[in-house]
Amino acid sequence: MKAVVFFSDGFEDIEALSPVDYLRRGGVEVTTVAVPSATMKDPKMAESSHNVRICTDMSFDEFKATFENNLPDCVVCPGGSNGAKNLSINETVLAFLQKMFDSNKLVGAICASPAFVLSKTDILKGKNWTCYPGCEEAVEDLEKLEDSTLCENVPFVTDGNLVTGRGPGASEEFSIELVRILCGEETAKKVHDGAMMR
Image (tube, one colour):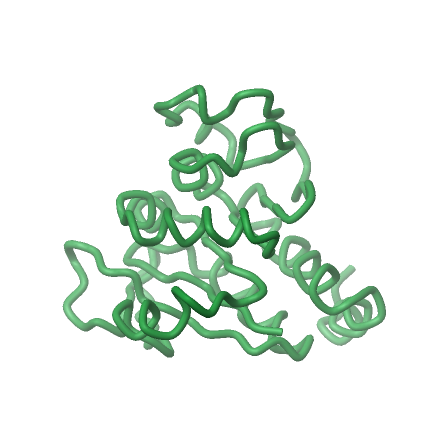
């Protein structure tokens, strides 16, 4: 199993690193990818919303050369309002997410990203989903939410090959759900217990 996690300046630390950590614990080959932004100086470095700098596995150009025609099994968009906004204006990211979804690959997004990023695609149409409270108000094209249902007060929502999470405090549960779908119940339980989650 292979997964890609996008990092852009302003990403929420725990929402980006929890999926990387838990998926790797589950045996998934995870590639971290830096998505360019106006503030990014190094093509492989992204700075979090709390000023933590992360050196990713791949630059965006390397990602395109590797994955555009060789889809992984999963893609994850962390939140952080600025990080999500940076993802939402990148047409290559949006096209990749749509291609993943249409190919029945697993798409994960948490916090601001379901509203800011996925709403720029057709992924949320007819789906149950969640996001950080209030972020849904930023959706510009309401047709993208046609027949969808925003689920409140839940840590994450799974609907088919889409998993959305509410916010930083839901990062672990969101990540374990990705592990469960990709690797099965037994592996998810091992990761859950090994991390001493409640």
